[in-house]
Amino acid sequence: MVISPLTQAADQPLRLVAETTRQAAQTLASLSAEAKNRAIEAVAVALEANATAIVAANQADCDAAVADHLAKPLYGRLKLDRVKLEGAIAGLRDVARLPDPVGTVQIHRELDAGLVLTRRAVPLGVLGVIFESRPDAVMQISALAIKSGNGVILKGGREAVRSCTALVQAIKQGLAAAGVDPAVVQLLTTREETRALLDLEGYVDLIIPRGSNAFVRFVQENTRIPVLGHADGICHLYIDREADLEQAIAIALDAKTTYPSACNAIETLLIHQDMAATGLPSLVEALHQARVELRGDEAARQIVPALVPATEEDWTTEYSDLILAIKVVASVEEAIAHINTYGSRHTEAIVTRNVSTAAHFMERVDAAGVFHNCSTRFADGFRYGFGAEVGISTQKMPPRGPVGLEGLVTYKYQLVGDGHVSSTYSGSDAKPFTHRDLS
Image 1: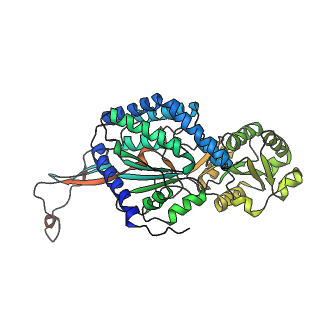
Image 2: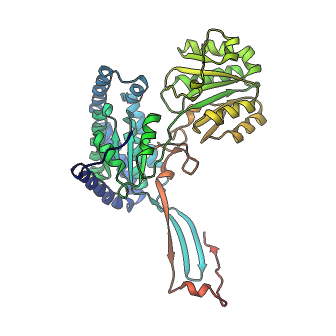
C-alpha cells in the first residue's frame, strides 16, 4: 500500500494540531510529579463520571461492528464493558503511583574542577499512536503520556470512533479540571488523518502502531518517523520431555484461550516426542473441550489422527483466534530452532521441571520475553507492574517487550562550567580530566 500525496488543505490543519500539542506538551513536561499525578487522578475521576456514556458509545460501536461483519479478533478488542473500563481506570491510578521518569539523573560526573556533566531523562515530545479497535488503549496511552510529560495524538479505527470520542472527551474534561492544557491529548477520526500523521516528521517524535501485522507493516513502511511496535505476535509454548503434564495443560489453555486475539496468545505448541507419546491425547482433549481448532504435523497426527494436517503456512500464521498448530520435536534444540525460525521475537515459553533445560532454552531463544513454567499471557505492561503499556516492541534496540514509562523518555546532556575551554585539555601540556562520578 502506498500513501498518496497530500494536498496542502488536508495537511495544514493537522500540522497546526501537532504544533499545538507540542506546545502543550512542553508546559506539561515542566510540571512536577505531584501535578502530573493530580492530572491523572482527575482523568480517572472524569472517566468514572462518564462511564455510562462511554459504555453506551462502545455498545453502539459494537452493534455497528456486528452489522459490518467485523472480524472476530477485532471485535474482541473493540468490546469495552463496564468491568473492562473499571480495570483500565485502575490502571491509570497505578500509573500515577509509579516513579516519575522525567528529570531522573542518569550520569552526574565531574570532568574537571568546576566542569560538571549531567545526563537527565526528558520527554520525547509528541507521540502519534494509531490503533485498530482497542479503545482501552486510549486510556492506557493517555495516562502514560501525561506521566512522562509527552503530548499524544491518537488515531483509532473507524470501528471504535464513538468509543474513542467519548473517552477523549472525558480525558480532556479531567485535564481541564486539573489545570492542564487539554491539547496534550488529541484524537483523529478519519483515514486521511492517518496518512497525514505519518508525514509529520519534525512534528511527531514517535509513531506507535497497535493492530494487525499487515497494519503495523503498513505504518513501518510509510513513515520516516521512528516506529515502536511489532508486526507479528507468533508466540510458542514448548512442552519438554520433563514437563509436569497437568501444569502444561493448564498453561496451554491459559495461553491460547483466555484472550486468543491478544498478541501474547500462543499460535504454535511444540511438544517433545517423549511427552507427546503419552501426554498429547490429554492435551488435545483439554483444548478440544475449550473449542480450540487443532492442526498437527505428521508426527502429531500419528498419535492423534483426528488433527487437521498442518502446513508450512501454519508455522507463520498469527491466527488471533481459537486455532492452534501442534508440532512434535525430538529435542529442546529442535524446539529452539523452530522458534528462532518462525517466531516473531515477542514471547516464548517452556514447561519443564529441569532447571538446566529451562535455562538453556531461555538463553538461546531470541525473543523480548522468554518464560519458564508460566503462560505467555503475562507479557503485559500492567502485569509487569508498569501500570499500563503503550505497546509491545520486538525490536532489538531498547525499549523491548511491553513498553511503559521508560520507553517514553530520552535524555539530554547538560554541561556546566566556569569559563572552561576545550584547548586546556589538548596539546603537549594538556590538563587531564578528573572524570569523577559525583553520584
